[in-house]
Length: 176
Image (cartoon, rainbow, N blue to C red; front, side):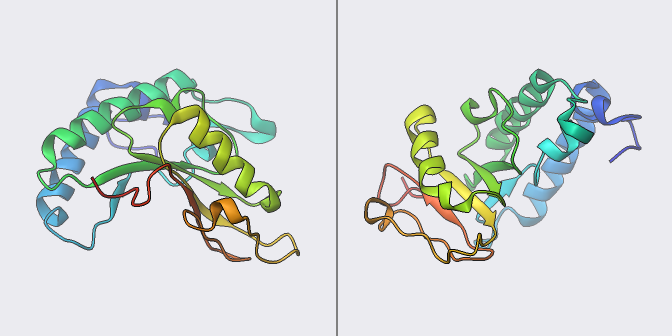
């Protein structure tokens, strides 16, 4: 991740030149691929918390910088994408305060590799707290097989390895 106008990981999120370069990349991606119906959503990061945290969960990059960066890039991407694609980002297991409440982020994702039996509760809590869809984009089996819940039957699915679950208050969360 280091290089170009961002000499450090921290600078990627806070340096004006690095942010401008990332916006140029977004502009290119929208111009090149934005027309395609195969683009379901633009994802800024896969497991951004693995960039922001070091060993033993020491915070290396201020969470406020990461949240501001996502808000700025989300606002910019929404302004330049004439096709109105969804915008997302993901974490692995460490929540970043404020990341779930960024307006231009249509839905967030979490990857759950521990306590996968808790996925229905994770989805319920997120929906209640943030009022928008949440996706468990990756998980692994805890040895108990597929989780089921009658109240989630319509709005989420998962498999015992590598599936995804989604919580939404609407029947068709991706559509207006």
